[in-house]
Amino acid sequence: QVQLVESGGGLVQPGGSLRLSCAASGRAVSSIGMGWFRQAPGKERMFVARTDWSADRTYYADSVKGRFTISRDNAKNTVYLQMNSLKPEDTAVYYCAAQYPGPTFGSWGQGTQVTVSS
Image 1: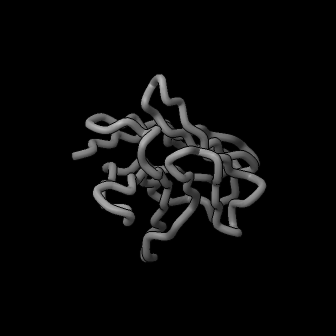
Image 2: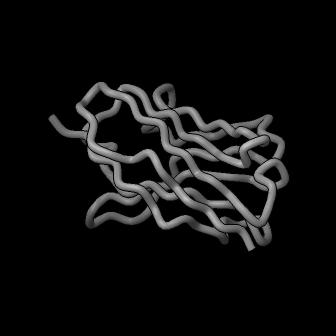
Image 3: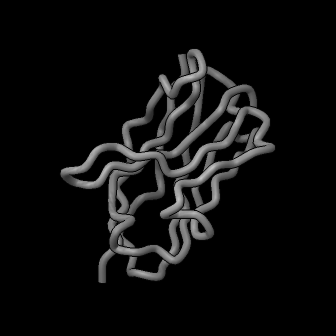
């Protein structure tokens, strides 16, 4: 079992930055793939970014490529999502997920709200 707890969400103006954190317990993030997803009001949950278990490769949705960066601190067992140049359309609840058990994202955090507004 993997427990995931997100933090770092909040209200930010367009063009601003936020860093989300996802603290994991029960499993080392260095041994599993990790990802971030988001869900805007009235829309389906969508993929944002992910990293494989070795962190050698990262993948991003086209809508965030060049603005968001996923990273991992194995010592803290934490995954981050650095979000720069935020836009109003980035407003959503952001979820951290782990590829555990198995290859699909089967473990999820409770989510953290990000609101981009002036």
